[in-house]
Image (cartoon, rainbow, N blue to C red; front, top):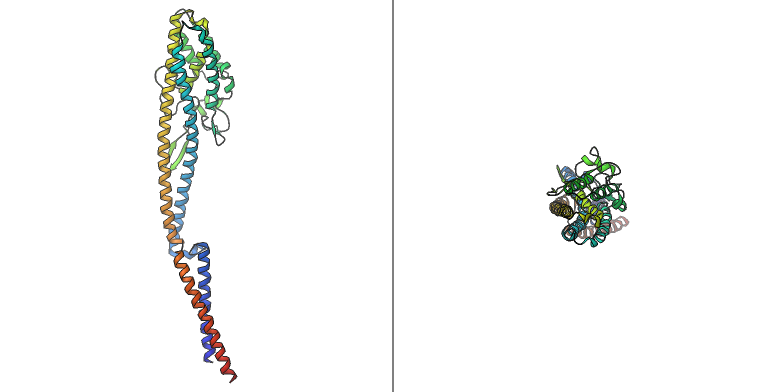
Length: 355
């Protein structure tokens, strides 16, 4: 019958409308054109490429963020170390005077306290990793910071200073430098790992992969310079220079002023060594600051590229929500009309049949 044929066609059209409404409802809920990648057709390769690039940019941004957290903590430690070097180099060492031996015990006590603090600062951590220990993240680069005032290096320096007199200031200075450079177990204040040239002592700085084919050095060491170059009265290492200067002040007693010329020469050596440490620390801070700026700039660029790629991917995978809502309303209206038409035709067909 004609009515039944019409109902069949309307039923088919209604099924199409129902399927379309289901798709639009799913798109409204997910914001995606399809949850099945294969449905993207010819756009699928481009979508996969964009997703991989977005993930890569995210990884670089995360790595840089972690590195910046470490450099921030490192800068804080360097800042305090620089404060100590400036205080003892520009204030206390300047006041070392053979005509005023009574203050030496006070300065020696302050230097011993500073030695402990320096050791603790060189053991600074961030995220459970030691910042100045090279790739040995789990072990402190200075195993016994509290024992620095009485350790092997300090004892060697004290022995040399105890022999001051008779015009031997240069020899005493050389002996204190040698003690600060001595990496023999039991003498060096540094861990066996970073003191060993075949292990931490010879490894490159810790770096972060900041872009394709680009690694940026960010790590520092407790026993040797990273970017800074020490000059003047130096062991070649700002950390060793600082420890040497503090241990030298800690070893001074009124007995050393008996030879005033030697005492003055040694005081000059101590002051110049601490000033070298202070200058090198400033250079280290400055170099690390430049690295931080470069990393922050790269992180910003990765973020901007991430947003651009995300927008391109959205054009492929995501729907225009306004368009979806408009089409949903139109589909609902058409579906309701279709239901009404089927009902009306079915009613008319039944009446004709009963006649």
